[in-house]
Amino acid sequence: MNENLFASFIKPSLMGLAIVIAIIMFPTSIMTTSNRLVGNRLHTFQQWLVKLVAKQMMMIHSPKGRTWSLMLVSLIMFIGSTNLLGLLPHTFTPTTQLSLNLGMAIPLWAGAVIMGFRHKMKESLAHFLPQGTPIPLIPMLVIIETISLFIQPMALAVRLTANITAGHLLMHLIGGATLVLTTISPPAATITFIILVLLTILEFAVALIQAYVFTLLVSLYLHDNT
Image (cartoon, rainbow, N blue to C red; front, side, top):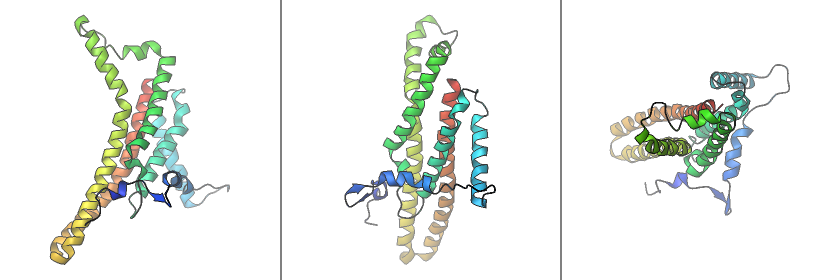
């Protein structure tokens, strides 16, 4: 119980060298590839999952927006696999770092917005001023809409960071309480252990849901600008 509560969020290092890049690249190594005409079950499941995600994401997009399909599918697979691997004991979850999430959110948001201003200038500018706005409210609404536009990537990154961090902290606290109650009150320890198991199952769902929400919002930003 003397362990720092936030120790699992410290960037890991080996012999003084940061190994975050190796951890971030690790999920790509578990994605199977096959040169055979008929792949194994894992490869078949992976292909089915990719097709399902791509179909759900690209259903609302125009042909120009569908050129982003590879990036969006890669994004949801990366975030989902990273979140799931972070639930393993003694592992590091890169998506608990706000800097990494901002590094994903800002370029994708900026690319979608720039594409909108390039190909749909009038429609993009129209978002800053809703139709029928009273003249005295025009300056205030333009300022509010501008702030809401620039806050979108921050909201993306903070949402992912907060949800993953909160789940890890809660699991850490309940796990520590279970360990302490084992010697004090075994019935109470059993109850907290059941809660910990249920929370772990919930965190598996949250890991996948947050990956889907992050990618879906990026997809919606893209849809609004293509």
